[in-house]
Structure formats: C-alpha cells, structure tokens
Length: 447
Ligand SMILES: O=C(O)Cc1cc(O)ccc1O
Ligand SMILES: [Fe+2]
Image (cartoon, rainbow, N blue to C red; front, side, top):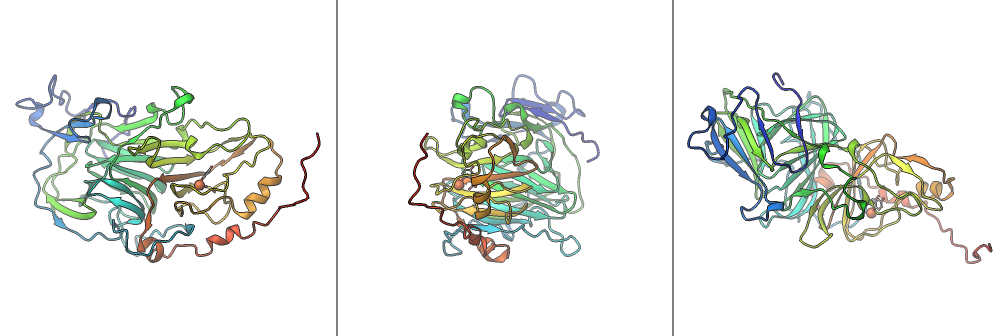
C-alpha cells in the first residue's frame, strides 16, 4: 500500500477524470486518441455499453496506460474450483434453505485467495445470452499477490459485500478499501485483484446482463435512499513493475475460467476518464424511509441498487438492506409479514441478527426462499410481536441484513446443497411452534 492514500471521487455514474499525481497532464486535452499520448502512454477504451446505447445508458471509459491490455500470452483454461454456471447438477429444491456461517479455512491449513475462495451457491440463466445471475460466497485468508488479476468478461456487475475482514480491491482505475458494511461494484471487463488482512468472508452477486442503477424515487422526491454523492470511485493509481514470473490474468468467460500471462502489471493506468468505473458505497449512508403510521412497508423501500429487466418494475436483481431504524407503526404487526413471492429471495447477514429470526440466522450464513416458497417470522418472533407494547423503538440496532431479490428462479449448486456442509437441515422447524389462535367465537369489540 506504499504510496497510496485512500482517496475517492464522489458521485454515481458521473463523467469522472483522474490522473495519478506522479504524472500531471497525463490526460490528453480535447481529444481521446492523440497521435502521441502524453508521457508516451497508450490509449485504450473500455466499453460498458453498445456504442449506440442512448446517452443516459451509454457507458465507457478511456485508459491512458503504459502498455495496452492486448499484449498478453494466449488464454488457457484453468480449474473453475467451486465457481460454476451449471444449473442442473442437482434436482431442484423448493424448500426454505438456510446455511450456517460458511467456513473460512485457516491459512495454516490451506492458503486460499479470493479466486480460489469463490463458491457458487445458486443462480440461473446464461452468460452466453447475457441474461441471468449467480450468487457466490467468498471465503479466503490470503491476498492475490502479483499472480492473479480477475476479470469477469460476461459480468455486468459484481457486487461484493464483505462480511468479515476488510478487502483492498486494486483495479485498473485505482484502489478501494472496502470494509464490512461497505459494498463494492466491479463492472463487466474491469480487472481487479483482492488483498485481505486475515480471515475474510463475503457475498457476491454477479449479474450477467444489466448494469446496476439507483432505483427511481417516484413520490419520495429528489433525495433519499442511497444518495448519488455517497458512491465513491477510486482515483488513478499505477504501478510500473515487473515480477519474476509475470502476472496471471484470470478471466471468467462463458462460465469458465481462463488464464493468460503478461510480463507487466495490468494496473498500469496512469490516467483515465469516463463514466464506466468501479465504485463503493457505505451502507450507513442509506437514508432510510419507512412507515410512520401503520402496516409494514414492502422491503423494496430499502432498495440500494437495482439491475432492471426489460419488464417495467421487474428487477433481474435488487440489492436491498435492512438497516437500523425506528419502528413506530401503530396497531401493526411490525416484523416482516408472512409471504409467498413471485421473486426469489436470497438473504445474508453482515452483523447482528435479523428481525424476523432472532436465532439461527447467523452473520456469514445465508438463506434462500425460492419463488412462491412460503416464509416469514419464526414462532418466537410471531408470539413476541403479537403482544409487544407498540412504543417507538429502535429496530435492527447493531445489525445489517440484506437481500438479493431476483425475478429468476434460481438453482442451488451441489456445493450449496452438499459440499459446503452448512445447510441447516432443521430450518423448517423454526415455524413449527406457530400455533392456531383461531377463535370462532371472537366478535368485533363494540365501541
Ligand atoms: O424476510 C424476508 O423474507 C424478506 C422480507 C422482508 C420484509 O420486510 C417483507 C417481506 C420480505 O419478504
Ligand atoms: Fe419475502
């Protein structure tokens, strides 16, 4: 980290420009492709949308780099480990699924870096047609030093939610330190590597065919939920380094991993400009909206980012959080309602507990309530909240649960159902204490 100060540019999807301070004037003036670039750099465009996309959705950035990315040895296949896009390994399982915290191996047992530590839990769709998603867990204990740089060629969005241990994400655009309760987004084709500082665990949402956007606010108005200025993009940082065995760039292409060698650092961008960048966001900046009268608002009120499908209002995936807030609703059962949803709900927990289940759902674990599978508060939560005095109170204090909600019906991988050995087979039992309160003799009380 020598020579790097945590510095960021603020805004969501802005036209940014950044020069490494060691090379002032590295950005060409007035044009993208001068005959000779300042400092003898190469110009390279990274397109994140078709050239012809309408202006509001057009995304690209220009790099000014020491050598262009094209100077690399041929791609060869490498082992995918537990990263998969094969959705028919197992028979479909519509049950409510819950996972205990996923194991992080000790580095004394086995050194695991971010690439080898990625495990696919569930997903649907296909990177070839660029329509689908996958959800991965990463558990690692070692940095990706020099050897590995990762690119997801078909990926539009790689949303990383560290749960335990901060990660230092080095990208072609610069570096981002990402701590638990921050998220970072790496977009399609952006090269990055991950340094860790001990045992590390987190969640990843990979979206194959759409960019994340801030949700429309409708009647909420111009401000609220995740505000654009709280999204942070790294500033330019380059290295001009040669290492003995060269650099290995790993990329995920059509669901498979490939590697290629090059003798120069891929993080050789001296200056860049554009609106297609990686970014991070701290979840504590979320301006929470919620019910101040009665009833439980749908969780879409807590949407941080959405990857829209072509059907209005139907997301490929929403990233939704359950942040600390006040609960004030009158004559209301305040926790989440019982639910059967046409969307799939994968949940994770960064810290604390989740309001619908005080026990059993643990930080670093997960749950999946698939399309139309009934779910909702467990027995203890229902009893407690049906009789609790309804004074204003803090909800979810010291906790941060989140949901990846998708219109895809997701398949669970063999790793998710078997290999990880974390599936909580007794999950269904949390609803068994729910008992009948029905009283046919009940009558409305006379006022
Ligand atoms: O706990 C869940 O399953 C997520 C969820 C939360 C909520 O507040 C309302 C509905 C819902 O599905
Ligand atoms: Fe739900």
